[in-house]
Image (cartoon, rainbow, N blue to C red; front, side, top):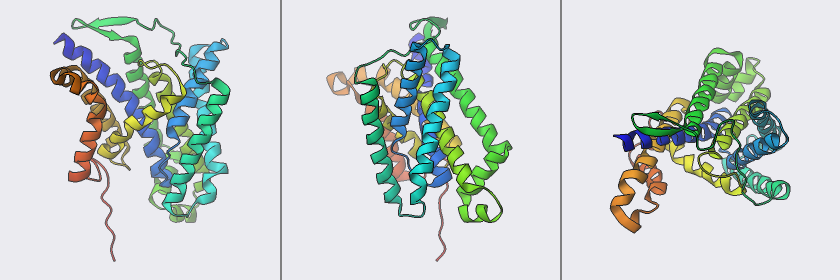
Length: 298
């Protein structure tokens, strides 16, 4: 039972990070129907911002907010200066453009921060734990769950109960109709990218503490959240969050219970386990748990 509680807590923490990463993808896709392949680089830049700010002596809480805001501003600037020029073009154009942006951001990170690993500072001891049912739970994992839940709760509130949320939903449904009724779609899209960038920074900061160090290759970890997007539904915020939590728990449980049974063959099986679930969903329910099945009348 102790092992189960230990693995469950670790899975929830990892799932909360996956959910935050996937949420950034879904926010942008819902608002502009662009799948942002540079999201992993934004995530990594947010983590590097945090390391640099705390290294300059900025208090941890203030550094967290500034890193999120800075990454959000970078994402909004990219949307305004580059991606908006290609609105209305075929979908593969925006895909190629975000891939190019990702490579440029990666090169910029190597120039500014280099290729060395850096530890992510936290206001508590890195190995600090507390006990539940005999299991030792890391503060890092608890913080990831709490901050992730707060961020997702704030976003859901904004989406449902504010004018910005109304504009985001209207723009996602039909941009031309939203413009016709006076909704500033351009401003809404820019704010959508800002929110997605802030979520990416928060995910990158806690990913750097769980238990990976901050480095340029941290951006590849964003692809580990890709199955959550497919399983939850590419246009479903709630489905993505649920899928992210579920896949994080399944990955850690597979590492704890399935890998040891398979010996050397199962050494890294847990890393591909979420992709196996994704493939099953693509076969059985390609639009995900809560995704909307589009129907076209001809």
